[in-house]
Structures are given as C-alpha cells and as structure tokens.
Amino acid sequence: MLFDINPKMKREDLYDREDELEEIFKALDLDERFITIYGIRRVGKSSLLRVALREANVLHAIIDVKGVYFEHKSVSRIHLYREIANYFTRNLNFFNRLGFKIKDFFGRLKGFHVSEFGVEVEAIPQISFTDLLERINDWCEKRGLRFVLAFDEAQYLRFSGNVRYDGVFAWCTDNLPNITLIVTGSEIGVLREFLRVNDPKAPLFGRYMREIYVKRFTRDQGIDFLIQGFRELGKKVKLEEIEDVIETFDGIVGWLTHYGYNRAVKGMSHKAALEEVFEEGSQLELAELEKLIEPSRNRYLSILKAVAHGATTWSDIKTYVIVKSGYIDDKTFTRLLKNLVKYGYLVKENNRYKIPDPIVKYLVTEKL
Ligand SMILES: Nc1ncnc2c1ncn2[C@@H]1O[C@H](COP(=O)(O)OP(=O)(O)O)[C@@H](O)[C@H]1O
Ligand SMILES: [Mg+2]
Image (tube, rainbow, N blue to C red; front, side, top):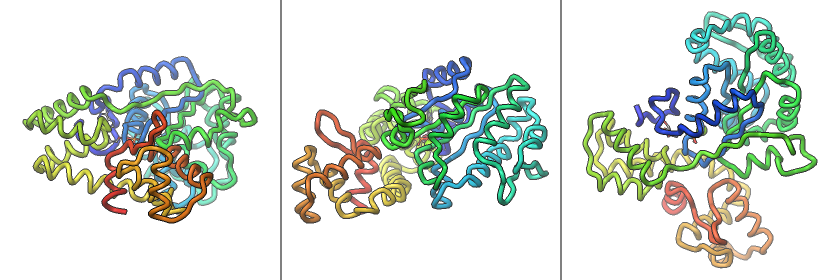
C-alpha cells in the first residue's frame, strides 16, 4: 500500500525512485565499498534503502542509528550489535529465502548466538567493531558473497563516545573488499561534518564514495502519487483537494503518505486529514528539534520564529531576534543561524533563509 506510514520494504509499495534504486544496484554490482544517501527528513531515504537492499537480494543489516540514540540517549557498540542481531531476527524469512545459513554465520561471530528466538547478543560482547567487520568479511570472502552494512541516520554515530566511526569506515573501505557500507543522513550538513569528507587530515578524505541525493517529489509526481494511492484503496477524491495537499506539503512524501492514510484509511475529511498531519507531524519533529536547540533555546527559537514570520535576510532575522530575546553579537548569531542550516531546519538560497518543511514551520509558530 502506497499510503502505509511505515518505511516501505517492497518495491511495489515504493512510488518511483527508479533512478535511485538503479544507482544502488549499480554500486553493488561494481562492488563499491562506500555509499552515502542524503535527503531531508521524510523524503524517503529509509524506504529507498530497505527496498534496494531486499531487491538486490544481498546479505545486509540496517542499523537505525537515530532510533538507538533516542531510545538509549547514547550510541554504544552493544546497541549497534543488538540492532544488527534484531535486523536478522526480523528478516529471517528473507535470509532463508536467500539460502543464507544464519547459524553458520553467527556461530562464528564471537558475542552473537542464534537461539529459537532469533539472533542474540551477549551482555558484554568482547569483540571490537573492526574485529566484527573483519570476521564478516572473511566469512563472505570464502563464499564469494558481499555484506552490506547500512547506518541509517549515521550522523547520530557522533554520540558513540570514544569510537571514531569515520576512522572505522575508512579502514573498512581500505581493507575489507567484501563489505559495502551505506550511510544515510537527513541532517546533511551534520553527516558531512561527521564523515569529515572535506578535511584533508580526516580518515575518509579523498576516498571514493558514491553519493545519492533523494529529492522531494516534483509537483506532478506528488499529484500522481496521491492519485495512485487513492486508486489503490478504491477511494475517489477531488483533484482540487489533491492540489491543495501538494501546495501544503510540497512534495515531501512522508507528509503526503500521512495525509493519504488519514483520508483513505481512517476516512477523515480533507480538512481534518490535513490538520491531523500538522498535529502528528509536529509531534514527530518535536523531540529532534528540542534536542538541537537545547543549548540556546530562546535564541534558536527566535531565529526560527523570525523566518516563520517572513524575515528572510541575515539582518532582518537578527533584528527580530534582538527584539525577542535581547542583544546577540554577530558571531554568535551567525553560528546559530548556520547550525540551523546545517541541521536542515533552514535553507539558504540567494542569501535568503526559509524553513523548507511546512510542518516545522507550523511547529515553530503554533507549538513552541
Ligand atoms: N517512494 C515512496 N513511495 C511511497 N511511500 C514512500 C516513499 N518514500 C517514502 N515513503 C513514505 O514516506 C514516509 C517517510 O519515509 P522514510 O523512508 O521514513 O523517510 P526518511 O527516512 O527520509 O525520513 C513513510 O511513511 C514512507 O512509507
Ligand atoms: Mg529514515
């Protein structure tokens, strides 16, 4: 179902993304070792990743790094291992179909074992991340297989304490030919900063990596997506309503999906379905935004409110912020503004700032 609100797993539930899927297949065919997938929140990165890796019939595990962070407030090695184990447990059928012997694989991996419930991890597994990768690589090399390890929302790995994952990634791409790493990030600036791809002194600098950008749907794609979604559920809706939805959510498939679900599955009216997306969506965005603005909450909020209320230039925003939250020096102001861009809450085009996500705008003006 196109309007299923969970990340998609099957190609038939994924609207389009043919080019992006092809790129991933091509990279895997070429045995490439490092792939990054960038795109704003709710544009469909996790769905693309899930569908691509299942369709490619490749051995893989996906670690939801953001999920780990928000559940445990940190990202430790054991949580990452548990994510890998859980991924296998949840997808046993898929791996069975591939003819993949889970027992054989994990039987050789220190710290992991297979029980009747699936794959489990020891309380304190005595195996480093690099060791784990090396063993996986050896196992695959002997069998002529590839293993894809994906870190969804990898920028949250920066909360992993003392393990430097950019170093681990660089080492892995240099030394382990049968492993492909995929990282995704919706906080594009943060992910690039975390990977330090532009820093000549950083481990990943100069490494080849395939970069895939997932973009929001065009107006036509958005309209077609909604029409197909409603058709699939046998529901007729007016074209002007569909156009209204696109005006409101601007090709961000996550919000379109929520709307379609509310309208067609829950049977809400057009207006109620829209309102519900704003309410639920802003709740979904709240925790992440609060986390980011925590260090300087008033000032960050004033900046966001300024832009939400129509200020677009550096100086107009600054004037608003000073009126609302008191004096701020240029350097601090610029730093906070840049952070908001880096985290994707603002975009800067032709020296003008705007909030790219209508739900964030609503959250800022109505809820905070
Ligand atoms: N191409 C697509 N076709 C249909 N639904 C999609 C597509 N991409 C994403 N979705 C839906 O949009 C929502 C957000 O997608 P998700 O993959 O979680 O985005 P992201 O990981 O970029 O935040 C989910 O409800 C998902 O089912
Ligand atoms: Mg995601």
